[in-house]
Length: 162
Figure 1 (cartoon, rainbow, N blue to C red):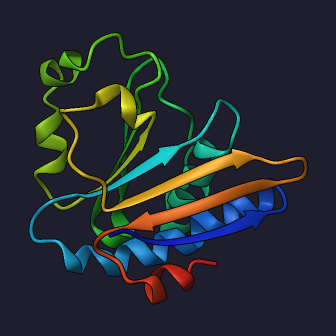
Figure 2 (cartoon, rainbow, N blue to C red):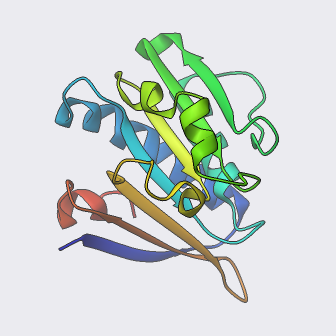
């Protein structure tokens, strides 16, 4: 059974702020997993705010450079020296076959202490680990509807993100 929380975001600034809350949450959560990456699936239509959320998270962790969607490179790696951490941001939208992930050594990204943010995770079905956190962002008439679910985090922990 998944623990879940659903709420709305008014605008882009609220999405960035959620990313900042998520950064602190994930730093604490890294202690829940043993020598592996935290896997965060980011689901939603084009333009829903997945990359904006990732930008808010990375900037909150102390990364000062540009954060862009890795649509053409499939993965961008970000060093976060303040926390001695690496964040991998995947965008699998243009993935033609999940087997391509094998060729790029996908398992290696998840085998070390890191945070893996995965946009369009359904395109890598069968080769990606089960997500520790799943964030779904949907367009609404005004703002976005966000659902965060997890098997390893309690409802109370997820409520702290709202």
